[in-house]
Length: 165
Image (spheres, rainbow, N blue to C red):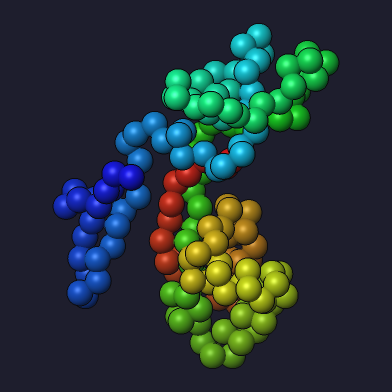
């Protein structure tokens, strides 16, 4: 695995190093293990479909793979249920900083409501940044805070641009 940390994509603040995720490479090879891919070249959206582009980026050394049955795909029309857009989305990574900046009374209420959205383990993983938050989850968290009368909501701890595998 190549080291992505270099002086050009790191900065130091208060004796803590931060890594800025700036993707300038085609990292389709980092797809999840057993990701379902598509081989349908006749699809009108294949060149913007993450499943097809992941298949196209496979190295020749790959021995086996998971694909959608081409016979099944031939039954699908233009609105393919397997289509995944190839654009990256912005995930949030952690919200400890948001909680730390809330008044204590609001913090207790928001924290309790957030814990009810997830099971306990997932809540703590999301809070620490181990579980990435989708734009929809970010919006739900911000809305919970706004419902408490807070209008100046700080950013999440970090952001990562990645594919919605």
